[in-house]
Length: 209
Image (tube, rainbow, N blue to C red; front, top):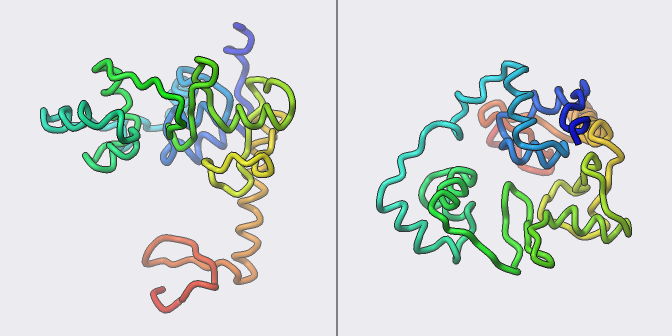
């Protein structure tokens, strides 16, 4: 177990973290790379990336009204939905809910860090990994990430799940998608809207750009 925790990060993993730490939470990075949250946080610190300055990590003002809303609706709404309503990130709502002892035990799937989670046989599991294990007919190793082929992390249809042999292989999958996107840009299928700072497909109207 100690060897797994102390395993060195590959260049592909470090590149993936550097590209994605601003837009993904620590938990999301941990799930993608098959690492623990503590390990991801430690690697980010070693890479001297300014995690603390990100907006999602700034202090959130939990007023009595917002806490009351959380207590009243935590069984009805997901952490993500509550966050949208009160202006907080999903991770901030999750931390506060657990701090208040508002635990959710349900057989219904719920969204956490952009993925479905669910209690199966009394154990909380990530549904994309659970479904991938059913597809493969075996348990997945911790260092076998599951890639959603269509980019939709909530689509756990077996044909949409690809089990990568390693975290480096998962990085290669994402790099290949990025290269295809840039190839489409170079031939004009995809364009960039400078006023919005977004790429778009040319089947969309250019009139706003």
